[in-house]
Length: 92
Image (cartoon, rainbow, N blue to C red; front, side, top):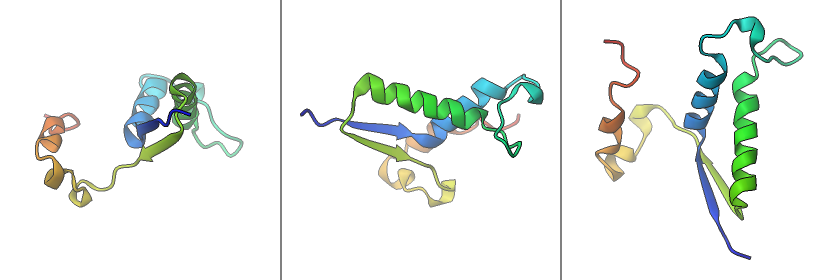
């Protein structure tokens, strides 16, 4: 068996799925669970993860979730990582 690691940026995937399913849409059109909680982003995230698993058939899966920016070690490991994203979500 060929060992393959599938690495997923969980926060990025969840964020993309959230905006893909909710941006510009009325709340009434978004999927909810029986308690009325929105599940649109989670539903699409699971669908996308399932599709990735089916496409790549990995033997192992790693899903990384971000922590607060001050707590990340990316700056120490790769200084250019953070500046690449500065200002994307900042209001001008």
